[in-house]
Amino acid sequence: MAVVNTGSKNSNVRMYTKSNSKWVLSNRIVSDSRTFGAGVAVSSNGKYVFITDEYEDNNGVENTGKVLVYKYNGKEFFVDQELIRTDTRANGNFGSSISVSSNGKLLVVSAAQNTPSEGKKGGVYTYKLNENLDMWQFAQELDFNKDEPYFGYDLAVSGDGSTIIASDIYRNVYIYGNDNDKFVRKATLRIEAPVSSISINQNGTSFTVSDFNSQLFHYETKNGAYSKTLITKPISDKVYDSYPGYKFAEKAQISQSGDVILVSANSDFYAPPADSIVSGKTLTNILTKKEECSPKYSWSNETTKIKTGAILVYKRNASGDWILHQYMKPDLSKIRSYKGKDICDQDYLNGYKGERFLDNGISFSLSGSSLVQTTINGNIFEYTNQQ
Image (tube, rainbow, N blue to C red):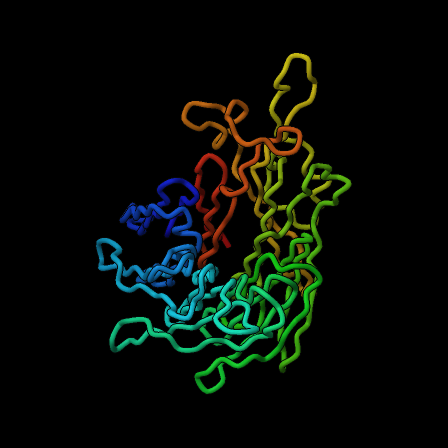
């Protein structure tokens, strides 16, 4: 597991390995680059960790970017390779997005702002593991619609390495399949709003696309055709009346089996219900208590909401419909204090009407049967599937 702290003067990535069911710190890698660790990918076997620094300068050219390949030797992770592209122009940002197949043999990296030649806007590149040399080698640059900018804004590779999905900054999602050891574009999908996140299952037949309009779509492919299903936001804007909205599905991740989808709700400020299993119920009836700070000033009666975010778990029912199954978030009492200060006394940048909110600390990652959730005040929680 890699835990990233970026944006500070010295960004750092902490590497953890699991021993006797406990996470043990293996390395702490520090960089003076503010964007070191903005993208991280870990092979399922834990042998390789890929860390991006998209604003790194190379050969005197600014912000061309690079990817550092760390390899585990049984005790710690060490730098084994450095991946750069000599055709990356200034501000090209190689390492904008990154994804590795679960079999640990295919790495996909983008340079979303690169303009290496006339008319090209972005780029996505594949690297394959040469098992004889035990090193990563460039394999292919993917073809794309050069009229749309920022190709590679987001991307994902299937667990078996057979399918790659990549988006541009607007509304196009490109699907590539492996054809005689070369990736060929199979389809281009047009999304209703700019793409926020992409995820794909193990064999590449099922994937999700979310957009910045808080819409989440599930796609499934059969015989070369793609069916689309809208997964409805579980709470209406009329009920959730706080700017900038519930921020549903800024991140979504489908399980490798393709039967579970985890969805972020970064602006959630509700107290969790006693029972997190919510199948067959609506959040409007379940989420009745808001987590708030008391009025800051004696002359004001206005409370401020504490946005700690939530993870929403969707499962498919017997009819094939996606149903909200579980609402997950830690109890506020476990995360509200930081360095002796209660969250209501901390000097966060205030949001709308002074709401306590630290968006960059709220995220999650799903790997196998383990779910790792990060939230405010540097807290990390691990959940395991009890099915």
